[in-house]
Image 1 (cartoon, rainbow, N blue to C red):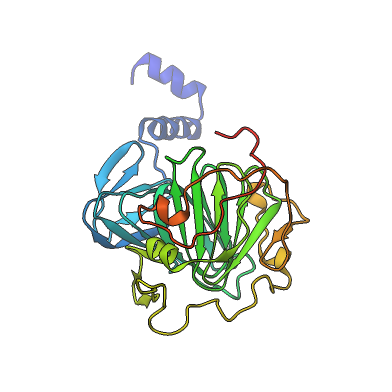
Image 2 (cartoon, rainbow, N blue to C red):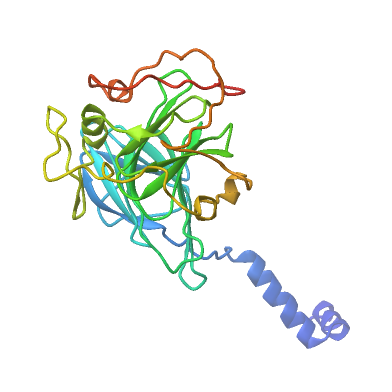
Amino acid sequence: MSAHIRVLAGRFPRKSIFALAAAVLLLAAPQLRAAPEPTGKADILTGTVTVERAGTQDVLKPGDPLFLKDRIKTGAGSSAEIVFVDLSRMKLAANTSLEITEYLYNPAEKTRQGLISLTSGKARFAVQDLQDFRDRRFRVQTRTAVVGSRDTDFIVAFDPNVPGGLLVAFCLENSIVVFSLDSPDKLVLLTANMISQVYGLNLPTPPRFATGAERIALMSELEQMLNMHIPIPGPSGAFTGGEPPGTGGTPGDFPNFESQFQLPPLGITQGYTVTSTTTTTTTSTLPPRPSPCVAGVMGAPCPGAQEPLRGRPGINQK
């Protein structure tokens, strides 16, 4: 043993030397990180579907896992059906882009919090009914508005080419809420077969039942999801396969509304103002803003569509 080593050995205890060596080895080795947990997986894909992850874009294949912050894009004539860890599902129509922004699922703590960011196109969402969960929020947001659900089937379309952006929410069963990011305390409740539109940062239009043309346009490419099939109306607007859902109900008759749709992560406060077909909150008397009807935005004529939004312009409207 050299004199230099003997001096070091005599100066430091043997245990300290071993501890120092172990620390050096740990610093030199690559940092090991726990693998991220998938939020779901690709299930049924047609055409060209890609996923963008950490700046890299790859072709998505059936069975591929999906993670937080993944951006899924469908090309022309393509579609993608995704199943999440809680068995909720979403289906993207052609030319759609969205991100899995948040998806927390913890059966032990009885919580599910989903947040999908829709950039363009349209998608259908079949949200799993977790009745024994204390928190089961599921939200779809665009740059201007949010659609909230807990256990239902609905469609959200967003056209960024309309000035300010146009969101269309269509409820297929149960109920959903719609609100502008500019006025998160003013929610609109939609029950089955009802739609609402949000132009820019304006308030959502009052809820109403969708016309046959609107339903056809919104359901196009999204009629089937797994084993689910929603009947669509024929060319004359008459439904095939029975009465359309929602026509026999009482819109707005929804007790304990505030307790069922609390969305605190988005800055929502207590004391909601609810708009339904039975109670309407008037926000202003501004003249109607000329805008295309929902079916026109989706590329089809829209006979019978009602007047566009009569609401105040949003602040900082883009």
